[in-house]
Image (spheres, rainbow over the protein chains, first blue to last red):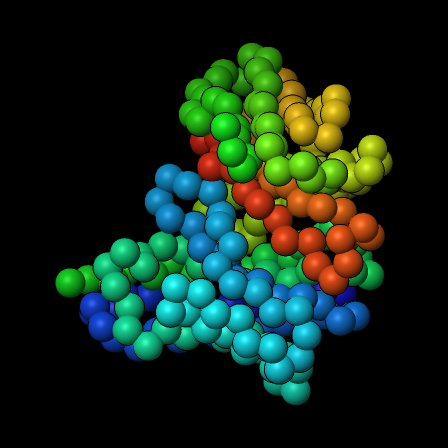
Length: 113
Length: 117
């Protein structure tokens, strides 16, 4: 079946530090992969996506590369800001399973000045 | 209004009450979803309405009842809830992947924070 595993948090970093949040997946078909972000008091927002192997999604300084050989989609940012404090969710969607999205448990990030 | 809106944003109810959550999408999508978000757990997909078909998670208790009168509106009717039902309930919408193609990016509303006393 399909599933997503992401690193447990919480993660606390100083401003301008390098961020990596690990995400690995299992899928029966050819999934698309996503990172969503949830700011306090809000719903989830799409941060970036990749639809096939070796694609790199990027947005707001965040990047993630779809690695089929390691079944991973790790989120990275070179220099985090206080405003990046949020919960980050890795997710996959597989056309075989139609509308089903599979989310990880979320990783809470706090960036301190 | 733009995107996906949800009302109310906060709801406190007793176990004997009946209430409804409302979701509206202004994106022209044809699929809508209810999710339950509890602390330390993955998002739980509760219900999907897509192309007038309903798909549900069989583990969702019958005290949750969805209604989708058209492709823009989605309701979640609540009755005789339990304290463990307290959570953030998120609505989302997308184009059905059978029509959209490769992926069905979902757009989320801000959620309704539900507390059951």
